[in-house]
Image 1 (cartoon, rainbow, N blue to C red):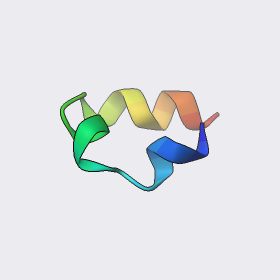
Image 2 (cartoon, rainbow, N blue to C red):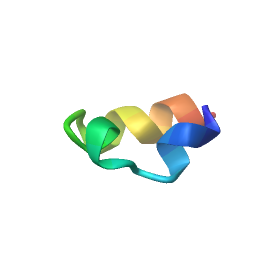
Image 3 (cartoon, rainbow, N blue to C red):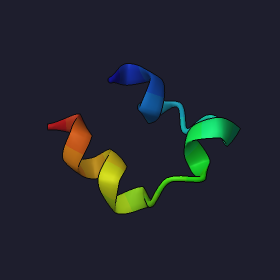
Image 4 (cartoon, rainbow, N blue to C red):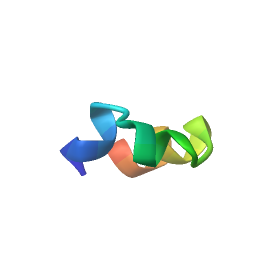
Length: 24
């Protein structure tokens, strides 16, 4: 999801590693 790329405060709670995996 592109929303995660923005790293919003709400998503910031989740681990950064998860965002990288979702990006793929």
